[in-house]
Length: 378
Image 1 (tube, rainbow, N blue to C red):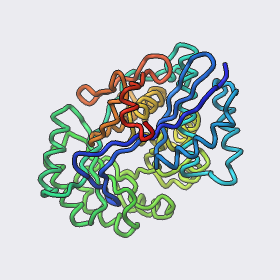
Image 2 (image 1 turned 45 degrees about the vertical axis):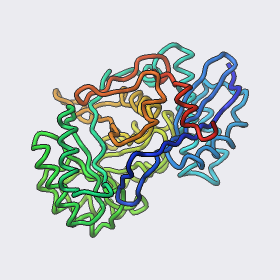
Image 3 (image 1 turned 30 degrees about the vertical axis):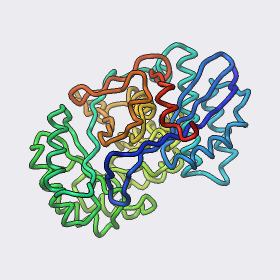
Image 4 (image 1 turned 180 degrees about the horizontal axis):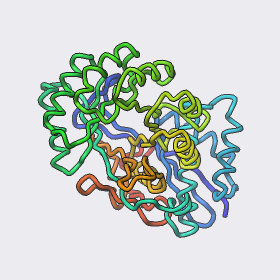
């Protein structure tokens, strides 16, 4: 079997109303899907996290190297691409582009053998995953104390047992909003906060000390990803577990984070950190260092499916416990017209639980009509 063609699909959709995290406003959702064709008639799908046009350019430039290659040689192809780009792209959009290609190759491999990807990654430790609701962004109008509390309570009513709140706007405001959301969801629901690296260590520690009393599950990206010393300072100062890694890439990047004990929870994005090939290696490293692994997920159904295939094989955070703490799926609840529309069978939750797709490959099928509707190239 040989690769015959690789396409990059840039998708866009306008939102009904904009929303913000600590560093930017969104009025459009975008995605970049990779489609790989073979001479056996098998097609694989992957997704790149990051700026769609930039990752598409990376994929289109890598594509000629892969024509006529055997798509089943996932690790060898990953190493070849990385080696050819090592001088120019050890992090960032180059690795994000490689990630989408790698995921699509695994989709082909699963379809070739007629099994879900998780079986090829070592076999499922679980068939369903508890999800946490990501949302609670800022809006253009209204009182955030009120609308965020109502939104969080809505997720709990849907069955979610964990929710994540966006912070990083102002320490005092963040503390007030955290308190309001905790009161709205009650003590039995886990509450995490995510600053999207908006603060320096001084501000992050100040905020952490103000919200520790609200039983915070983790404090995500308190400081910029380059500031490993800042991560260590925040981690040392607080009792809240510290999470990060969505802006880190490959096992080489995570090696430094793990060896410096900067994190309690690693959050590589499967569509950014190197794809399934690399993220399985990062997960194995994470286990060796005693660091929990909960992947970052903020894409379409392709990204969700790829993350679920990996989550299926990860060990529990407490492998010797009779009541193990299992890894979680990030389940984006913000408006995203593309997310589920491109799948013929959307990946949904039931009372906060998401089943791992069990069909061949990623276990999903793409709706071509929906794809063309969002494709900026028609």
